[in-house]
Image 1 (spheres, helix red, strand yellow):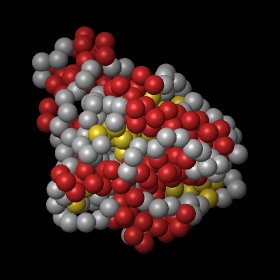
Image 2 (cartoon, one colour; image 1 turned 90 degrees about the vertical axis):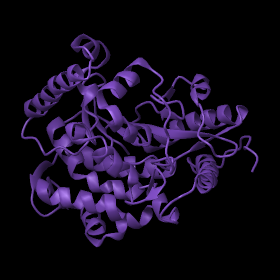
Image 3 (cartoon, rainbow, N blue to C red; image 1 turned 180 degrees about the vertical axis):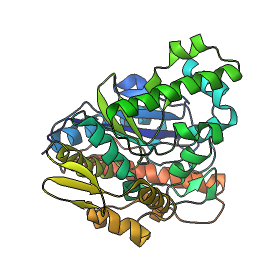
Image 4 (cartoon, rainbow, N blue to C red; image 1 turned 180 degrees about the horizontal axis):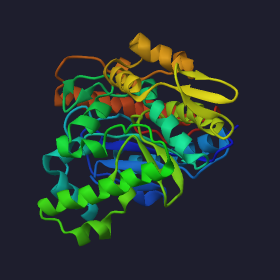
Length: 366
């Protein structure tokens, strides 16, 4: 049972009946919690915040069913992968996206080729929540869903590697993992400093300070794996790939149990361990190495598996899709289309059983 309200945002690729990426904006008209992303082949399905796992499951299942049916009516499918496997070069479809393109330049390509899961937790002991979620970064290995980025096989989580490193040196501070903070004031100071830097970078690329301030709040410009959302207010964990919803719910449940523990337990540094009155997390340099190994090798790296078990995860209960998507070093467009359709089938089957009660709805023809 949750003690903190928790919400999920799941990004999904939209493909046509041949597996090609296509415009999914029509699907977003089917439900107020199905929203467009900044390129047309990517949509986001959201839940309301819930204080029970059952409520979260039912909400995600219902909204995904609506999205799948809307896609079906349009001759389209939804794909739960961290990347589209081969390259997406769709243009930005909104003013804020176009400004991002102008500021990031070629570095925006990584965002156009990445789909993630965002989990929002009700704010409690905020600085401990932020630091704990930072320490949980290697848990992205539990749900890694694509080893391919723009057609090339690479890291176990190709999305995490690309998103954090392919944007260009000037922008890595906006996408990489931040060090632990000693206070909430320090964290907020980092956000404000990055916002000022963002406005300077924008000015160098011909985007006025006024335009940035109109389109972006400070928290909108930091796209890091852990974010403080002042407007909601939540602490947002953005490390995981997009993946099957049953795996998303399992991860949200496991991570919420740890985050809610910060209400009564202090966060300390040392050998990782969960105790009744304290949570011990590693020093940041140790964590950085674990995160790198989690991105590159996933649960197959013994250090990653051991670390997550020390923090209470049953790693055997997870089935990362990356492991089933291995193949040639270079993936052709035809192979990518076939794999997308296979994962669309898996998504539909997973959604039907998400609450443990088999549900029936019209299926896209095989």
